Length: 187
Image 1: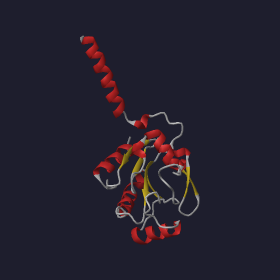
Image 2 (image 1 turned 120 degrees about the vertical axis):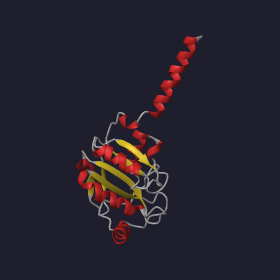
Image 3 (image 1 turned 60 degrees about the vertical axis):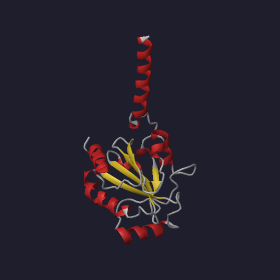
Image 4 (image 1 turned 60 degrees about the horizontal axis):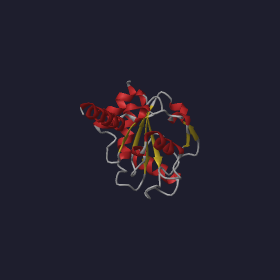
């Protein structure tokens, strides 16, 4: 009787442990740095140029209630870029709150927030039409990587794997995000 109990307890423990295992240790067939994406100016960004850096990938939008986070993202970029952080904004119409074209987005960001961190072209970030980076994130990290709204954040470590994700309401300057960034930078 006791051995059945301990067998069930062991199985239950293993099940629980598998749920909480960090998905960044998954066997990736590709890493973040194996991809490309188009910049807001139309140039191709080869993400391999960010190897050995930490990347905070954020789907952004001009008409969102979280749009003020642009300033917070710029602050992160200013404070951590020399230490190896790349903040990358991905304008998206997935939630119906982005401007019509890249020029409008770029002007909005420069005029209102003095954005200097890299911005991409406008892309879908969920569903069948999502950019390959977001499909890659879902495949390797699961549902937590799928943006539920604008300003969802995906932290990529120096190995090009997902370290963590953060919901839209988590401010980029929060101690939670800064700690994760610093852990990834100084590891």
